[in-house]
Every structure is written in C-alpha cells, then in structure tokens.
Picture 1: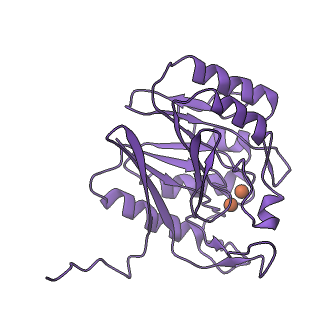
Picture 2 (picture 1 turned 135 degrees about the vertical axis):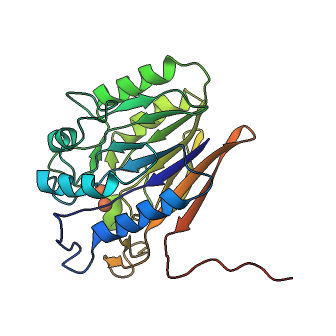
Picture 3 (picture 1 turned 120 degrees about the vertical axis):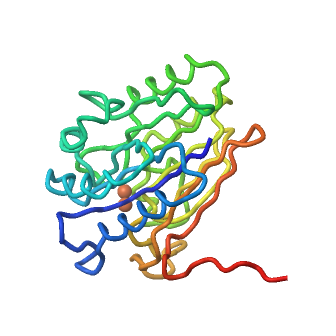
Amino acid sequence: MLIAHITDLHLRTEGEMAFSGHVDTAARLAQTVDFLNGFKPAPDLVLVTGDLVDFGKAEEYANLRRVLDRLQAPAYLIPGNHDNRDNLRRAFPDHAYLPQSGFLHYVVEGHPVRLIGLDTLDQGKVGGLMCPERIAWLDARLAEAGDKPTLLFMHHPPYTTGMVRMDGYACVGGDAMGEVVRRHPQVERVVCGHLHRATVRRWCGTVISSSPATAPEVALNIHGQGIHGWVETPPYVGFYLWQDGGIVSHLTAVDPGKPAHPFVY
Ligand SMILES: [Fe+2]
Ligand SMILES: [Fe+2]
C-alpha cells in the first residue's frame, strides 16, 4: 500500500495570488497533481491535511475542486485552521466519507493500513484543538479494530518544535490525545501539516511527523533566532509505504525543472 500526503495548499480564488500576492498556490497544486498522476507506482490514495484554502470561502473551495478534480487517486480531505467546515463540505458533496454534520473526522477502511482523519479545527483560532469529544471519538475508533495497523492524519501537530511562533499555534488537548494513542500500540504513525516544514519525533509510543506544504515553506527559525516568514521552496509530497510490517516514509520535492539523472558507472 502506497499512501501519498500533501498539505497546506492555501488556495485562493481562481487567478488570485497568495502569500502577500507573490505565490500562485493553485499552480503549485496543479504541478503537484501532475506529479502524483504520473508517479509510478500510482499511490492508492492521497491524504490532504488541511489549510486547503486561505480564507474558508466558497469560491476558494470551487477553485480547489477545479484543480484537485484532475487527481486520479482518491483524495481524503481534513480541515486546517484556514478552512471552514460547512463550505468545505458543500464543495465536496460527492466525498461520501465526510460526515454530513459536526466534526470532519472519519475512518478509511479496506486497505492493509487503517486510516483515521482527525479534525483539529478550532474555528476562528490559528492553533488547533483536540477537545474531549474528539479524543473520545478517536479512542472508540481505535478500540473497535483490534491491532490492525493504523495511520492517523491531522492538521495541527500535538507537539512542539522549537519554532516558538509556530509552537504558539500548536494543538490544545494534544497531550490528552497522546495518552489515548499510547494505549493503542497499533498506531504506526501520525502525520501532520500546519508547520509547512518537515519534522519528526518519537511521541506517545509511535512516530509522528509533519510534512512541508504544496504552498511555500515556513523559514526555519529555532528559538526565535531569525525571520518568522516563508521561503519559496518547491511543493513537497510525502509518501508512506506499508512494507515488511512497517511504514517507511519518503519526502520529495516536486520540481519539474530539475529532472532526475541516471547514475553512470
Ligand atoms: Fe498552512
Ligand atoms: Fe495551519
């Protein structure tokens, strides 16, 4: 099973530039869709972990649909802090896994790895929230499927990174969620977005990581030493390959201007 992961798309309305008018996030997503459609072996599905659009507007979701509809593999969407649950739901009525009301969390069955999408959106806040209701839902979903290998995906990382400004927008309730995860050792991996950077750590008996965005990267800034800003790196895609009883991950930049060259011996 090959799982692809993209995050933090930050689409605006068609033709509108993001990141202070400098970045065509729709073009970057289109480039990423082309890359995924051409990738061999074809991914079984694509996880899309939030900040799908920039302001949660219906017209932005229409633009997202326009680009994402070309994706050949099935996409599984969850919201981030820039999203709006109702507008997201309304734009993707054919995405039957999305609950009709309430939190946009769900389980994807039918694969060697069980996938659980979490909804950390705390509407109006930049940081995320795993409230007792959402944590109880996760606990019940993990309890119902025994030891089947499971991957959780969510927008806000429930751990700090040393990037102090981003740590201020982490996930409230992350520690309580972690206690639930610790009791369910079938959780092979947790993958996040929001940071616009690659990070990884051991966490509550599993491995947790964040991926860079299809939008630009957040500049690396540890303990406030440097700019709190962004860098126009290429879009990134994560892959999670279920193989030999474990999940091995790969991160790769999508940069059509820099093709691969064969080694010559
Ligand atoms: Fe983001
Ligand atoms: Fe975010």
